[in-house]
Image (tube, rainbow, N blue to C red; front, side, top):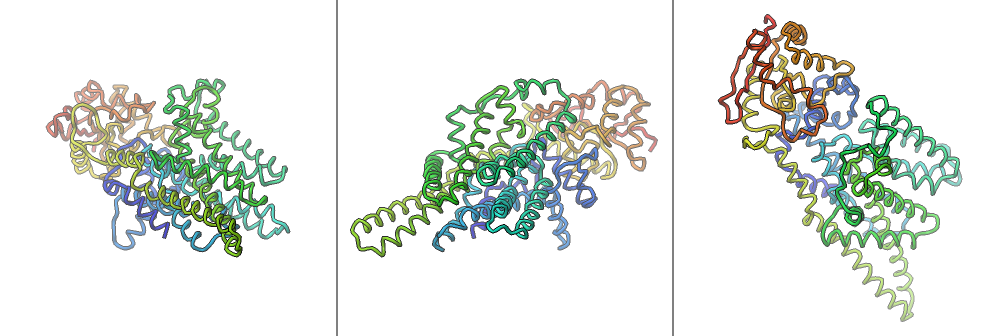
Length: 588
């Protein structure tokens, strides 16, 4: 029941426009492109989703394309946006709260809890898991960082498998069969997460490390650290090979454009309030402190290490978050580098640390109170009866507070509402207002639809993707040479740089020799559709597309016959001057 409620909460939060319109955000066209590529080419494309043939974590996109495939089996055609949103709903509204419930069950399984208490927690935990804007909501707006968010939603399953593996290692008597089974389960779960997003390994290491240190023998601890060091070395090697820079030996210069967004007090409150605000956040923080103390003070010696590990994991998350949003310098840069010093990625760890600790603390208090009440009920002593009354009152207050936070977070949650408003804005197509260049407007939709109607879906259209033309691929099934903002010219992507350089050269022969062989069976087109969108100006390589909206260069090719104007769009709107569709003179 708790999973169903969580799914309804996430579904109700989603703006209706996400089911039919694209998210106008820098990374969104890439995710739509990956899904469509899988739908067209099958699972064989999973390991080379990028336009240049490079690897991108495919698991989310495999889920989305599978949803579209299943729908087609029943005669229903759903858009790539509907498939995308359905996959996000499944991962965020079902898989994530189910995983959190599974993880919470690990800490509750040894507690002597009444059936009613277990049933109540089975409802509260999934709902509480989707209450904070930290995850799963923020990453739909930021980027959207869909693959990383999907991996975060699956991380509780790996945490649960890993804790079971630790149990198998420490079992007395030792059971080799149980160990092998748990090792295989953990390895398989880890492989799934690597397909979701390899960078989730850093979050996993941060959260599982306290359990390894506190519960395993030294030889395992040393082995774990060796694995972490090797992983860190592999990551460093990847960065050195992939991203050339002279600043690697000067960490104080990393993320030089980063600016603190919170004070120390604000950052700490944000973490310990689980990103909730107002009185809901204050009560959540108070509950967290009570639960942390209770989980250590009231648990048996054998289970206390789990409680301490949960607290340490939360403190580590707080450390990384506070250093990221509050401080600058070499140390904060080094510690937050695995997450690109990105506040949005780091805040996803907060619910993963807080919800299990809250659950364990509440479970410990309920189990301890239940036992005390049973003992007091069998005693006729006045003081025992008085203690029983105090326990009942305190327990009732605690339960009321927990239920109040869980329910109120669904109604009084400004941060989550703000994210929803951002997503709604990004999926709303407005008229051009002349004050800014938007990624998509009603005028651009008209032009893109008209252009694709003229060219067909097989002919290649060249245009600056940052003017919004990259959305034509998912909107109208256009074959855009640049279907995403950064297709990359490495590997099989040399054509992207070749076309840019040939277009900028002013040499008609070079341009036609480069462009015409792209698809010899179809004409090649060029679409002029204004400048680059203001919201995409942070892209560091935006200058590579400047030649595609250089009026002098375009007019020169028109004058010498390299380009022929086949459709003029200057009359579509007030801001569409010089917008036009051209055909390359390839002899078609």
